[in-house]
Image (tube, rainbow, N blue to C red; front, side, top):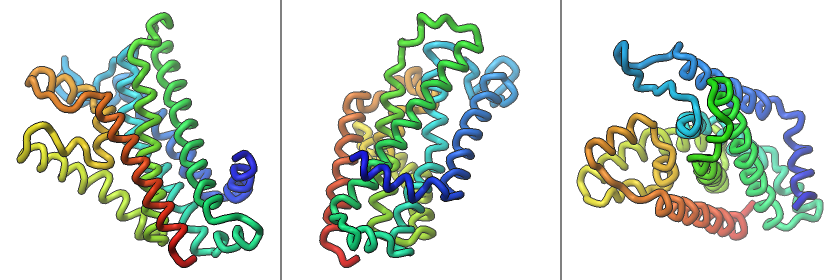
Length: 262
């Protein structure tokens, strides 16, 4: 495992696109949360802010978690570019020539997905602690609702795993990026709303991306749903479905990689 990660690190350590997109994610996530938390960005009337400026424990976890979901697409693009570049520059074949098995190449990419998800989760956690402490929140309240950071990990594994699987299926960076962004941020959201409107029990919440997205809803939307007595699948159910989809991505990608012509 460590050997595979070391080789992947050698591929990306001098890759400018990786560092630029990573820096954009860090800067945008921090800046966006700072502007909302400080009250610079507001949405609503004088006495109501729909963006929710409560950046103290435990509400900070819902806020930073939701916006991490929003910006995680930047890092999914990294997964897509790193994977499709292997096909464009034939480095996947060179790995096999150098003694790798196809399964090792496949698992190396999933290790990047896992490591990137862990890094995002840790960064989001530190961001939440930093903002809460800066807003004078007692550190003793930190653990309440901190399970949202587990949701961040599951969501990023889901989004990145989906992006990786698309990369194995399509193998062209531009087309894969467009399809991922259109599906994850437009098509599936519209499909979810239509399905939930037409059918009871909110089956649209079980779609590949939405099952994880529902774990980190916009805080104000959760309040609206509570007031309107709208109930959907429990968080435990959504987590299980999300893990199920991650397993599906793994199986599809493995079949595609091991049985296709390189």
